[in-house]
Length: 236
Image (cartoon, rainbow, N blue to C red; front, side, top):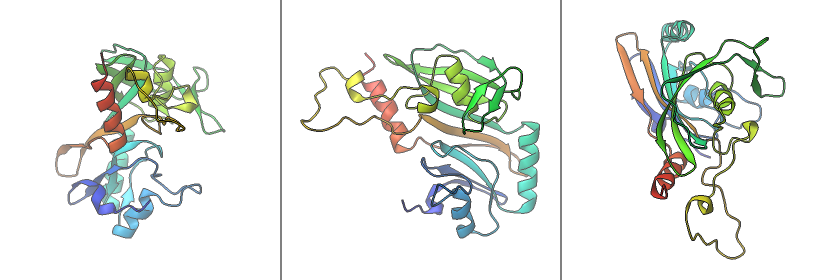
């Protein structure tokens, strides 16, 4: 997959860049990934540094510092939790969350997964608000207060609202045949899921760009947009 870093930029100021990270691309160096955002950023400008990470399959807002002072300033904001992140998720099941806060410690496991563990886990809080409901699925706004590994995915699974196509946390895949009546598959073909990754998108970042507080938003990538469009189309 050939990626032009410049095409990913949704905001650029004197001190920071925010990109709309595509899915299936690692944020930082990963021995299992041939390319990562940090590598692309350095090729664009050797002074750039990725300030945080999104899971490889997660798309959306990723903050990148243009110099060492900006990187330190971002690190302090993340440490003090003054950077506000909003994600959109499509979950299995119908859920009516209204600023529902989940406060459940998360423990990262050696196998690359995480779980709620109230004895050994680290403090983790996420606020969920339902944006739309469909026939058997929900579009949910997720606001993580903390930043633990797989936090949104683990907390939604705990609430019996696992992400669509999230195999690690028992989130079922979604096929058009499940939502479209009288759907007919072409002969001798296998039906593919509407989205081939877990359905999570980092929608916005609110942060201090060393001049003023700003809000940056990243539009849905094609696969997430198609998923939501089909759910809306065949809602009834």
